[in-house]
Image (cartoon, one colour):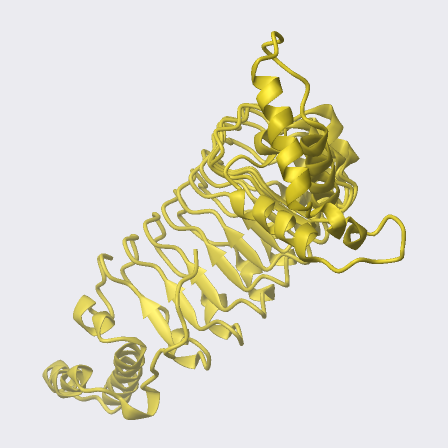
Length: 395
């Protein structure tokens, strides 16, 4: 029976057997250690062998388990109930054994890479459960039984066939990490905004076209990971998620960004690769914590002069954009070269204005321009910034 419960988790079962055989006796009744006398002597083993031989000739095709096997199973189940983590992934499960729902102390349960389509109603008995991983199964909807597991802090539903989140998800008030990657979602419920402790929202590779405006109430949100969706705009309310540090919106349909991003003073990374953005907003360059802006494969042609005022941006990715100023070759050399080009342009403008004020000919002004633009190919040492070795794009 336990074998059907833990499937391929042979190591767990063997560990419990070892624990029960090697433990020292205890005087406290009910403690697992007191079962150390389970290790029988050779005489008892001989008796057991003879009993097994008699059982082989029994006419009943399904004989009752030997008392010793029953005791072994009872001890193993008792040890299992003390376990706080259980991993029965990759076990070809079609349904969850009810024995799992009786593990009162269970805090973490992994059921990934099975063939589950539903969960038993008894699942709501797992009052201690904090982390549940049921990705890579065949769920078409979120089992409502999970909404009674109100202590959940992590819920992974990735790589299923889910097309809608229930409004009842607001019952999971303790939820901190919600993984919804690779499903069939087109929207997120308004009740998502009631998850005020939510820190991670990962919903890549879905069909989501917009975020609910109630997301402004997710004031603890630090990671927003939504590449490969159909987002055409980012709601202005996103600026109320002031704890955001990482925003990944690659491969969507965004054409612009809201000015409310100016409120995200903790934002460190903004990834916008493969969208339809034509201009990066000025407010980005005033963000004190922003270090990386990834905006490759968009429709950006120019950068605002305020880029050179940024004191925090260390890396700016603009490859595969129709850059006119600064040029694509300048942008390829990094943020230092970009700042250098913008400063030279500012110097050129001032010289042109001065030349016009003094009545110089247009030919003289063009000569000044030519001399100034020569410096665009030289690195500007005072603005060279390097990307730290420890920075990487986490997914």
